[in-house]
Length: 174
Image (cartoon, rainbow, N blue to C red; front, side):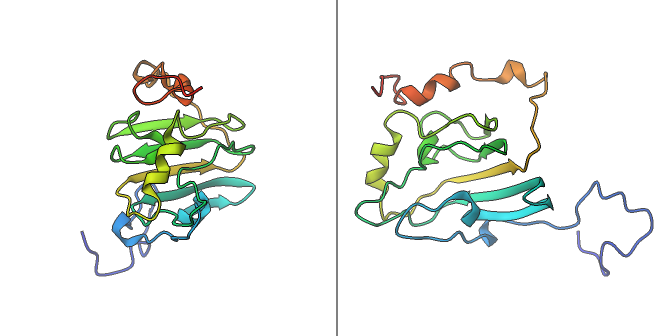
């Protein structure tokens, strides 16, 4: 739908529907010779960062780090002041490859450490300097916790918390 005027030029706007669309193909993340942190993939934010609100990051295919000593997979980390929710459009995201299905969500509450599962970091060496084809969207809150709706609890993968200690085939990473 295209309007002949600015969409906020009206009476009674509730703000529940956003009159703008953003296609992930219009987002161009920074490619560097080493792994880049999520803020380099930030699409937009809302609220009064960093004190309240949230940020949305778009993770899409790019040339992965090509430095000979780089580990392209994300490093182990935790978000002390934010909750992290990630949506996966495909199964190619290296840190979760083999664990997520298209349409999967992961949720990492603030201060909960998380990292690539099992041997994903070691396998990411093979991706160094190559074009990845993943597509994922992450929401990070700023000092505002998220809650899982009770309707979503039956959909939870009960084995997901254990995935950080095993390879995608179920073998122990230790």
